[in-house]
Image (cartoon, rainbow, N blue to C red):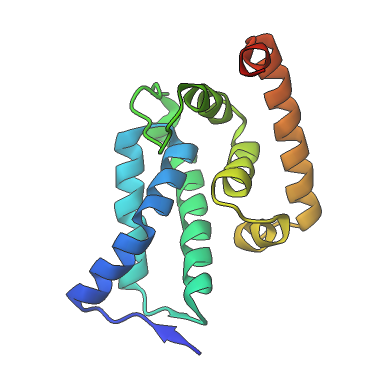
Length: 167
């Protein structure tokens, strides 16, 4: 079954309400800045509705949004204007526990290639095969990036005394 997006107000509203959280959280994870994340969020949905795209199913649409978000954020990070780093004071992710908030701060400090894979695996629940298809990289690369990201987190968390507090 093929899905073609209708450009009606109800269709636009439905897709944005369904995928807004996912896209915005990914933008925050990659860009570490609320203002840049909001710009990226708008750009991604504008791309979606400007192009006459056809999707096989809802999962295909979701995968396209994730890949488009990752690519768009990478492009933004490489731009001249982004060379001036901004703090992550206004990062907003759905966090219920103070300890989880501290963990997210450590995840946000990971190098770019590890951060996205860790986020998709642990926060969005994708498996390594799905992540490899979404990001268009080999599954072995995803597993390697997950392992290296975890190793960095273990080291950082043990240095920060984080593991002792959680026991």
